[in-house]
Length: 257
Image (cartoon, rainbow, N blue to C red; front, side):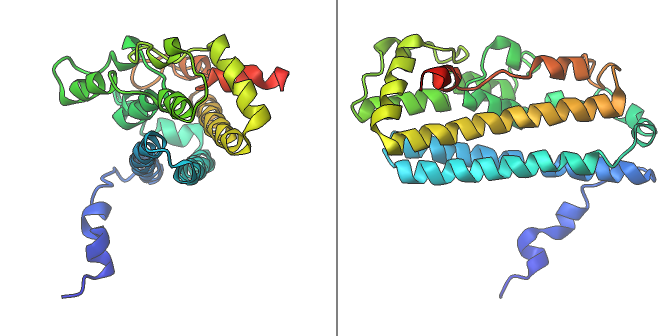
């Protein structure tokens, strides 16, 4: 029997998930954040495809996938415009019902950061020891980040990526490497296809930084300097995450190109 549109999308289930009070703006808040989590789910799927594309030497697929991730991130950032239609007074009318919930607890966003190379014990401290989420992140700690996969991809194509970069501790955050930067300068001068792929990575990096900036400004606009609902420093905590590039080597070479 042919499936109907509501059945295919499971609309009854989906539309039953927005349980809110009679507060008009709380429904807006819930819908926006549920949609964020759906976009995060899609980004995680695309990041896995991107990793597989690099590991199997399919640069065309990698380029296409990076383009999709960047487009999704632009959509995620633009949704801040909708949140900002809610005044501070409107948000504070239901804010107490969130505590101690916080976007800081989004496991999917934390996984996106982890897969992109923002790693370290501090980033998973909120995950309960022995929990399924902690076990997943412990497993991810032994897998290459996107940058690690990209360096391995370049090495497989004959670029002299230093062994120290290829064999680094995968559980640690990705840092800058002057030796890698020398190789990237050669890539930019000799290989247009790899250069284009590098620039797509810069697009992705810039997209995450745009998200962080809009998140900070939205928080400042809505709660000012108040403590976040999860007990974080609120906008001040978010401000500390600004201008932390994912792929520092690609930014470091800019003044030498």
